[in-house]
Amino acid sequence: MREELAELLRDCLVRRSRGSGPGGQHRNVTESRVDVLHLPSGLRVVCDETRSQHQNLELALERLAQRLEAASRVAIPRVTRHTRLRRVKERILSDKRRNSQVKKNRRSPGDGGGHD
Image (cartoon, rainbow, N blue to C red; front, side, top):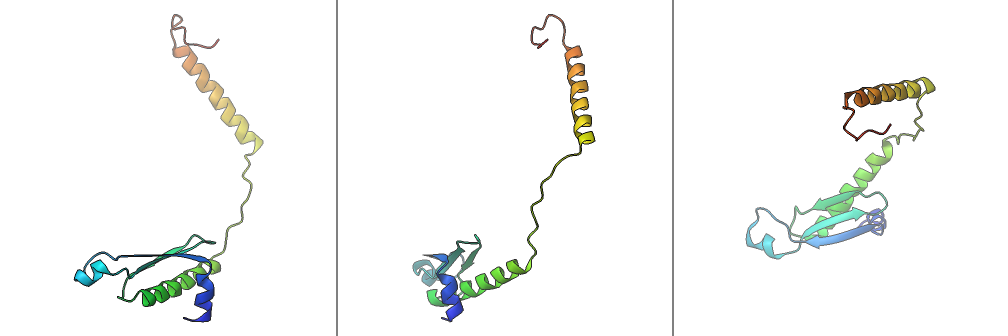
């Protein structure tokens, strides 16, 4: 295994399981499927293409390295604080007051459910 893949493997959780799907008896009894979870980023790669668990692990790590590289090229959006303008806040509050009055006027005086 290449050195960079071995280094990547240190940050990963690897689970092995039996593959599913077509492939007959051999596929049902060998645990050749590899599920690799990169803990720092949360990326997950599953590989079950060959009968060899070692080959599947190497393929999964190569794919994970490609995905991490692609994710690092994507610009991470900056988190900005979202605040409303004062006029917008006032308009929303006046709409709420108006709707509240409309609802209060719908009630009959004997309901007893109103908060006067």
